[in-house]
View 1 (cartoon, rainbow, N blue to C red):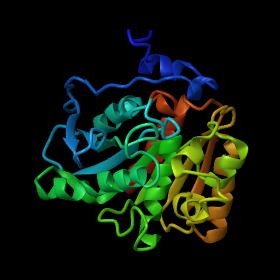
View 2 (spheres, one colour):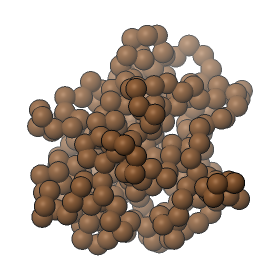
View 3 (cartoon, one colour):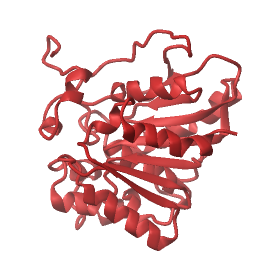
View 4 (tube, rainbow, N blue to C red):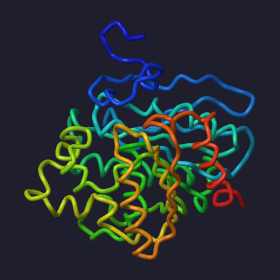
Length: 295
């Protein structure tokens, strides 16, 4: 169904395939109720802006709990929000992981794009440190990041932050992940711009073509920042009509050449299969994350 003002619900978002990036997605807050395995999310701000917040999902018990940071996609555009990751967040919480599902300024809202989107994602991840200092039961030694589509790009970029120049957005991280999952991620921004992935989504994010703002592509594109030194799992459907499967193929080949611990996890399915926690791509991802997050 659609909302009265024409916005699309998250359920319909997940039911549409290749044409979806051209359509509007749900825009709303998480309203999950408490369950036997833990509470619904608590919204916490990491900055003063309207989009500078995250939803914290905690299991029952004292913890400390390993943390899974979730980063939603939507080609970095303001029409898409963090509710896209709610099903994965609830599933991970039920596995007794804390989940920090983050929002950030996107293209189309004030401050979105370069560098605001990157500043926000970095600040959101680093906000785990003050949360832990305030007594939130999160284990700072066991933090992983997973992101879908444009969020897969940002998840991989989070792993790159320690190697960024000191004056770059996201440099000098306070929180460093021990593992990253890219779900159908846009991992080669130059190729994405050349291939028109998401139309002009990459150019809109970085403010121009590679020939005009090449340094931004150097700093923002995960394939340009290798090696990261962080294990990465690239989960990608062979029938993906939104982000080409070759994006993950190229990244994995380059990461292997650079000496990183990386795995390509292909499956038969489309761009949105990875957002369903009942299906094999997510279950296999959990199996890959579990030994890294559990003590």
